[in-house]
Image (cartoon, rainbow over all chains, first blue to last red; front, side, top):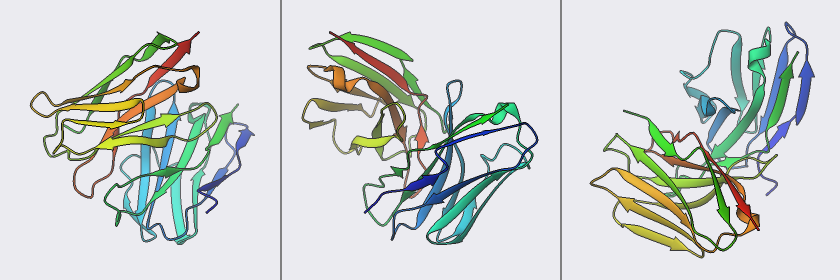
Length: 115
Length: 111
């Protein structure tokens, strides 16, 4: 399996622009998570889906952030409008909780820089 | 209640030494305690995990020690090597709930 695939790997944009991050989870996994990583706050869970349905979006910082999962093989995280404080590495992870271990499989991340 | 407190924030260990990272939690319902390892430019990856029915789990040079009464668990890396230099995250969850991550420890192994 190719693992969790994220795109783009790097994104540099200007304040006020729309940013869309994409994720393809591992086939067969029924949970998908979006995390944000910064030096100050570590790994923060933004939102997670189960079977394409958003379960918990309490970590989404503001209305500027939105996430969708239109099907089992694709999810997007959108920031509109973007601000410099959104600069971070955004990770997508997937898992299958049917497994006792509950292991999360992370993608390599999308590094976002908002100027 | 949901926090997992991790220390130290950064750690420098000599090659061949023992690296020790500690975590503490409050939620007594937590029943799954994994450690994730993250190399620069990569996503975290599961390193080792423990459930509270055992006090220790060892995989190669990596050992988790678990103290249920103190609500603490730790990662020990024996014979630390430069290739172990990474950021380590402890985490915890209960039942089928989401993982709560610690804030991470940046480990550097020096020759």
